[in-house]
Length: 115
Length: 114
Image (cartoon, rainbow over all chains, first blue to last red; front, side, top):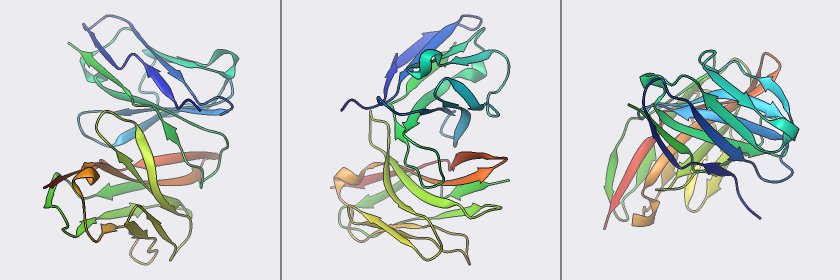
């Protein structure tokens, strides 16, 4: 069974450009999460999809970030326009169910560098 | 609000040394507690978990006990190996404002020398 896959693994862009990150969750996992880790700090929650619906987007930093999950399968996270402080590792995770005991399955992350 | 605090790294140990990575939490409800591990070039993987007070999670020789009285979930291993070199994240999961959410610590990098 394929795990959570993220693309690209690395992205280097200039300030003001647009970048789109993609996440393919494990097949059948209704729950999809985006997280971000900046400069060795804690991994911070960005948002949570249940199928194609945004369950919780309270962690999205501002309106330069747009996440979509059309059809409830893969998800994209677009940053437009990118700023220097957006640099970090963006993780996607999925799980089959919601709940406090649920294990998250993580992708290997996208390292975003904004210059 | 909920939060997780874990000891800063890096932690450097010799092979077969005893490992402790401290983790404390703040939560308004009754969270589940987790340790995730990230090996170089990979995503985070669940290492162990505990869902209620006094539960002990264990896996691959690692252990952590859910201590409600001290709000702690310290990770321990009696004898580390070079292959344990990785970044370890403490996390809690709780239901707040009607949604389930994970809160992670800053991660602790462990380096084990042969």
